[in-house]
Length: 405
Ligand code: SF4
Image (cartoon, rainbow, N blue to C red; front, side):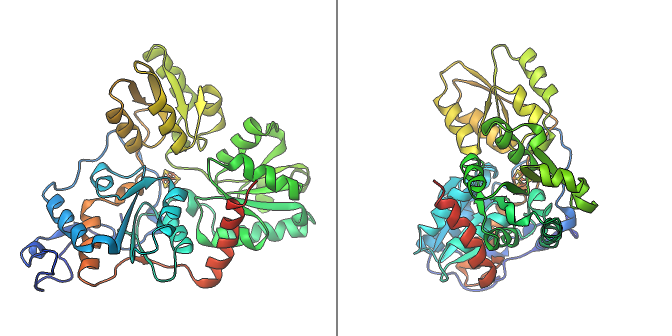
């Protein structure tokens, strides 16, 4: 966490109550708001005991309810599935990153879109919503370590190398939704598409219909798992591009031969599961079904029974027969919510030593209260904006995804 925790009071302390009932006294309570500024160097995975952090001060719930009422239809609160329960309870809709961005675009009457998720998601929402809507990220330090693993300059350098090798004309870039607006714009500029974990197979099939190779950004595991398990490629058809090494750590010949050039990025949460976790849970929970996210490493996916996007994991477990047992390899907040919402099934986390997503968890109740109270008081804070040129090019890649056959 960057800087020291600071005791902040609402920016409007001392102002008169507004029409929806936020009183002067409410604003005199200090909010402990951590991480008001982004610190890219802090967006790294950490170890934990497998437990979720304690919820924030429950007394803030009343304050959040009053601020939410004060904002009314002027605000639309989006909650990603990996968010804390204390935040999800105030979400108007929940979903994965793309569903939420589309939900926001389908609500043009909402002046403020409060995105309880991470930075790249808020950027996508800003790209897809109208110019009159303002997208708010309650904590600017809520980044994504995977998205940070592919910077604009690194990707441009990679592309220049592919040009020097004379193969860039045969390469179609495909970027996962979990990437910055800059990378989506790069992809749009070079005739590529965005994909999600739900439509990665369709995106790759489309891309390989237009080129001989794919540059897949930034998650090597989703790219590899989709290429090998869904499109029948071999591991030898894939080469990893390490942005810190000349030629990405490969050889010119390997780059010329490869069908999939996989950016060396990964998710700090899903990348920590191991195949040994699958073996361990099978011995511990008789008859257990193992379901994992495609951001997990290839060995884990091979050892599991099912692979699925966040939305597919939820649907699979909700539709599973009562009495069935599931070990789930995805983010801890979601797994614990699934366990609570499906008491007729046994649902366990795939590995107790894997962490919740530390950046998702930065959005806590104090930040949400701070954001909502500020907006209700006429002060726009933590607005996420994408410049028009970047937005237009990124939009082209997003539109291509929507047009995938
Ligand atoms: S779960 Fe992984 S991909 Fe998702 S926001 Fe966290 S670090 Fe990024």
